[in-house]
Image (cartoon, rainbow, N blue to C red):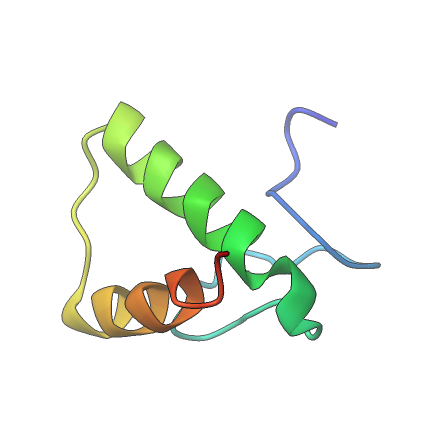
Length: 63
């Protein structure tokens, strides 16, 4: 559904950022982090320091 937040697992994640919620399986961390960065970029949204740290860690799982 277009109105629901991006989700990579069985349930909605609500309005939490990646510093508060990550997909339980690290297999999806790269996909989730890339999508998060894309949305932030497209809509010119700011990134908190905690988000940046977490996203950097999550992007580190990309091959």
